[in-house]
Image (cartoon, rainbow, N blue to C red; front, side, top):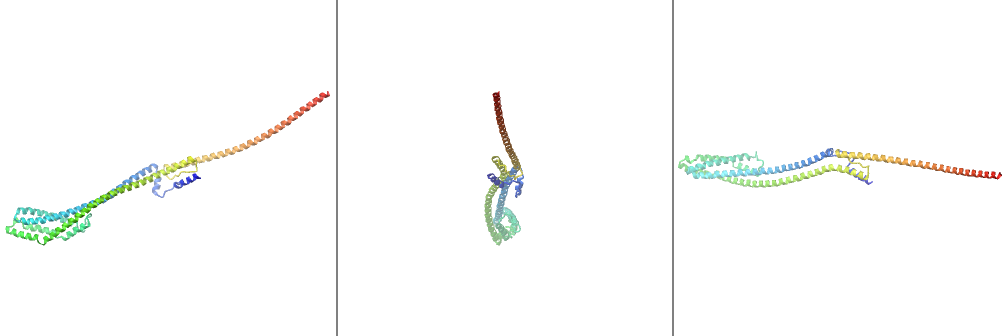
Length: 375
């Protein structure tokens, strides 16, 4: 009974037939050879580890790249705002110097050349900002607040280009090399009025707004650097997490693969030990795979069946021999009894013969004695 219980428990976990698993992968995997299973297991483990690690690096690098582009964009904004502020400041400073150098033509000419350079630089930066920070074409990695700040600045001071053009024309028309001393005095007065008129106060407001814009872009740049540091930390966490997850999945897959290979072998080995130790030939090894282990289990089952048939045939022969022995013993007993009876009859006949012979001898002796007596 104990053997049958063990067999039933084993049979419940490992059915004695090749039943198609509900999982397609499990069904496909069960049809592979042992060497192929080991190869597929190693390939899957390595592939998952590599794929998981690669995905982790790609995701982490994506966040880091986005933060880097955000930092670069913030730096560009800060650089452009600073350049604009510097150019406007130099334009204003050079204007004041040109008024002072009206009576010194050489110095005026030198500063006038610098003024033209500063004006051209300011016009170029302003033109680039107009193209880059329009509502229809917003920069991808620039912050919303900075885009609004640049857009408001561009919309509020649309006349800046005209102001630069007027500055060039005004100083070009009042070149002291082409003016008399009286005209120079008049030009100084006109330039002074131009520098202290309403456009100048507008220019002062423009400088203040640019200064505020520089402060906003500087703060955004610092925030972008903090975001980059956070992205680098997040990148490290993602890489470590992806590595850990890949290792965990690869470990589980390796355990599944090893069990899928080892369990059928263990089941066949257990049945073989039970048959050998307990001489229980009613057991059958589970054949759940189509690989070498399944072939081994099928061969073992056939061997067990053949041994069982041989034992059954030997038992039948022994039973027949026992029957023949009993019949022979009975016949020997009957024959012995017959012989005993015949011996007894022979002994009785011999006794009678002896008794008759003795009687005849005695009778003969009596007869001879009478004859002698008569004679």
